[in-house]
Length: 171
Ligand SMILES: [Zn+2]
Image 1 (cartoon, rainbow, N blue to C red):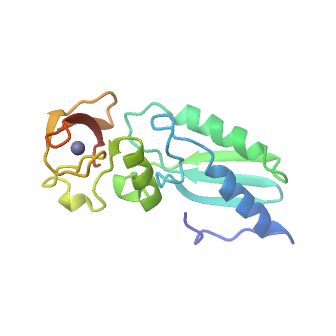
Image 2: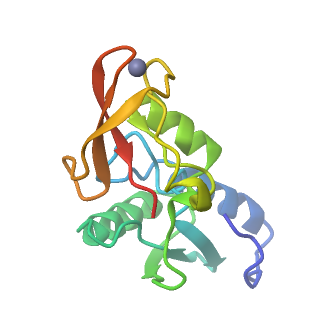
């Protein structure tokens, strides 16, 4: 999460409030992959806290995922529960677009635990590399279906442990 945005006029306990807001954002799950928070996905660009009013700037993930209204609602609902916050605003920023490179190391680990192969950290390698199996780590995997259960994921099959798995498409 970037802290380089304009630092707000913080009150005496402003820093604490900010930390509480950051903590609360970790509770907001991605509607597509509930194992991951919007923070893990790297969706949170910045936030400003001022006089009990918080503005959160989010970059939506895959354009195909019709989840923006849900995410906005969840952020508003969760942050209103934070003591000291009485007004919440959510902004969506579309440029530069979100890429799978923004998923945090913690987020990648959670994806794997959830049974979804995380996308490569560096997009340039995405065309060449096949995802490793999230269950056994084998790279003997093959693409079964480019279009998995959601637009964001593909179906793979692991030749080693003989299980199908999903991989998040690199974008
Ligand atoms: Zn496997």
